[in-house]
Length: 194
Image (cartoon, helix red, strand yellow):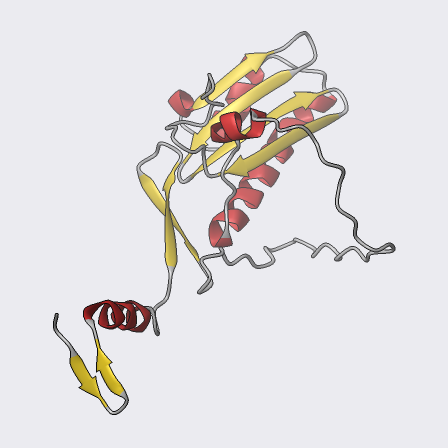
């Protein structure tokens, strides 16, 4: 076994390996690279040294107040083991962080503004919705539009570095942006289960 002498004694290979790992992390900046929703375009978000994504207020966004607790926290009642979340976690969208989150919020706002005249005019046709979305610059082959009854239109847009999904119904137009799904290329919800 190779050893190094120090003032206090000798260090063996396991101790040297541990020191090397600790020293390698000093002064580094961590960056997460997430594959952009089947587009082949990586998106990067800065992270803290603990690996958590760094988010900041986006233009036009107001910070949400932190709720105050009025009662002491108590543990929730024990529930039977449910493996639904464990078996369907691959269907949970991956959130956007950093500048990508701001870009997603801006894209959502543009989509809502483009679809609002259709909603106000009771135009819930897939063709009109598709025309508005492609008019925003999204390629027709990356836009899916589907009708769900006479007054509901849903859409999925595979944009560069993000997915945009939503619905237009009589009382609102809803949209959200996210990074994609774990283990799935594309912006549609993965099927099946584990």
